[in-house]
Length: 143
Image (cartoon, rainbow, N blue to C red; front, side, top):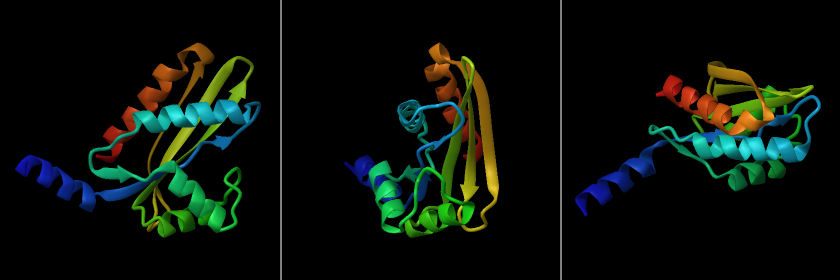
């Protein structure tokens, strides 16, 4: 019981992190980007942060009148501030011939600086393993 209460207290005070859907890059469909973004979010679980639900993130983006497909850095930071996030995770998915390319950045909301980044190129069949690697690599870089 005491352990559960301590865990709840730590979770309530954990810093917030917003993980946005990846930007739609060259030669990829919205469905591909949605699927890979979802896979990234399910593998990105830093111990020191509480990840804000994507529905809440999307609601703030919509309320601010932004198009999530092409926000500027200033717009991204404003979304982060509205969410009271300490960091934001943003990425872009591209495709050239049969290879996907993902580049992801972790941005400090207060300064706008990139504090960690990771990227990789992979075949479609390998996307789950590669996205998991990228997510876990970023988690290690920010903890």
